[in-house]
Image 1 (cartoon, rainbow, N blue to C red):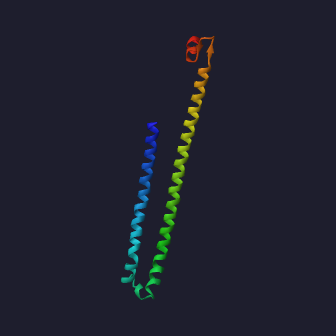
Image 2: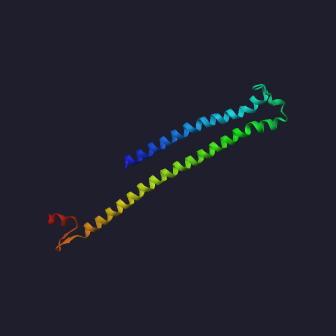
Image 3: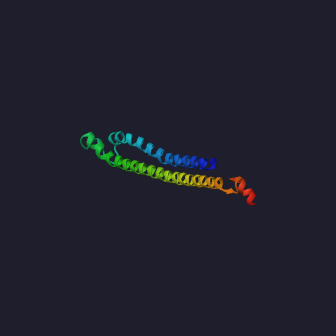
Length: 133
């Protein structure tokens, strides 16, 4: 039992490490997106001055729209990925639980069979196997 619990813990820890290896760079990228409006509207990039292209809201919306859409797509993918991993883990746990349940049911049937063995009038249960030997 302890080996199974350790395996489950190791899988969960590995899953957490993988998740955070993807999540941390994504969070840093989103924080970087917060500074894009300031950078694009206060400086001239490649000879193009975005502060003179019209209303500032149109500029920010036009510049940040694709970045926000990409971040939303990545977050959606991460949500599906986490759900997929959780479903895989649940399948494995259910397989183990079914096996254990079947095993213990078979053990109970075996105990009942051993208990019902009778040789003569006095020898019953486990003791019957000793007399058979």
